[in-house]
Image (tube, rainbow, N blue to C red):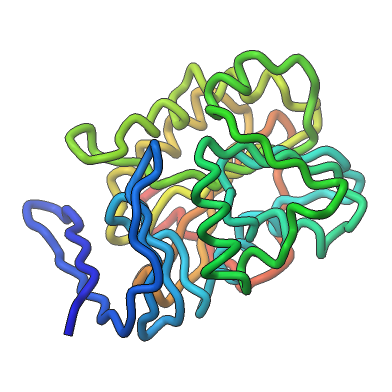
Length: 260
């Protein structure tokens, strides 16, 4: 049997996670990254540059936890950084079908592959008039944008160690970039990023939490258990106004687990 194997640095060693592959649906490379779609024990899996992004078994848990807990009634204009699979945009459309949503994802091939091979995630969401897919670099888009958003969601590939493939994404987690994101945020707006597992990514989660504290007056961290990630997945929200955490799914306060 073939396996998808992920090696995760943990303390002074490495944890190896092996996902049995039942069938390979797509394997290819875009201009930006390797793309793999397989059938597994968690249903269909989307894997970018060797890192699991989502599964059909629990992607709704992940996406609901990103968009719902810090959403405020009255928000109208939303920016999603990444999110080319359409899952986050779809969950926002369930909250309010009239939201004006911009999805900025650099890689159109991810969207094309998900549309063809994982339609249960894509759900034809980008055919909706109020959801706008923009294939641009998220760094350049935010730097050049002069309008305002009520909410910015970071549905990006995971923060990486500097010697890992895809570590150029780390600039989108930097103090300078988050200050730029804050510039395009309305005064009562909120920024929420997914940032990794409370156990397996503890070091990076704490690092990003402290970066958010350098930028925003108020910072909250919460988590939700995602079976295919084998961890409580963490989300960090920043705003210059107090942040209320609510909505679906079941949310855990992970600050004590991280010693924050």
